[in-house]
Length: 326
Image (cartoon, rainbow, N blue to C red; front, side, top):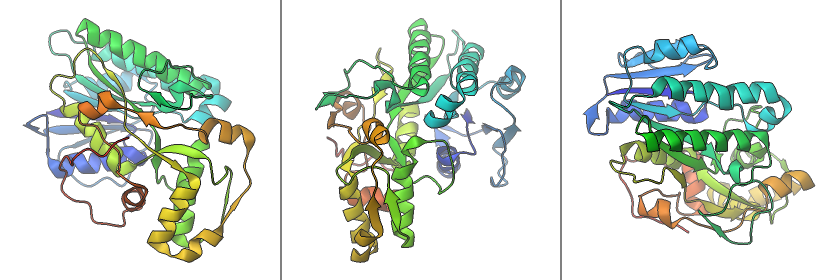
């Protein structure tokens, strides 16, 4: 089994690579090689299964090198985040759209179609969501980032229909807790809030306590990515909205206070930014029966989200737990 991970040095990529190496198998086969692609690849273990290729995914020659010996499964995680992609349109288009289309073109193989798990985003839905929604809502991206994600979804679904790439698309919600560093994500406040209260730091939240978002821990997200790769017969539908925890900021603050102490509540102040809250603070309840039926899941509760996102409990062996979904 040969696996490739793009964006391997990123927040999700490192955790995914770690889990792949620990379990040592995928789709019933032992891992022979895990090819890592990113701009810089430092801090990975000295493991004979790893193949490190540093460079830009926008270079077709780098992709050809990565695929030269063949690949069975690709986890495509690399992207220019939403805020950065909006401010630097040409860069976002090159990485999020054109380089991804080039990768798909190089992957096409009707005789032995590789599995590709693509990290899409809830950004495809845009703003002004209905009061309640499910997986059937028509996407209407409000940012270039979401538009490019939707374009790739369409291309990957078409290649799956043609039997050339075995595509599996997951629309990811807000994944926490990302490192406390500039990352171009306008939704970074979700992770910053968690890190600040965990450390006992004051935090001024740019959305109100009543603002609702869709949440998932990185740990749970990686489990869902791996589950997508393991599916043996996904059927004709190849784009899935992951189950999410729909939580208000105040609910997350309460869960953090339960974990770290009642004094954490007083550390939070609020200065809502109207445009930010319109994009990231008005997410409604979301029904996901299709993805639930396939075995995808969310963290289960606000308390479990905090534990998983901040690594407050030792990670158990990867076992599919009973579904807890909304």
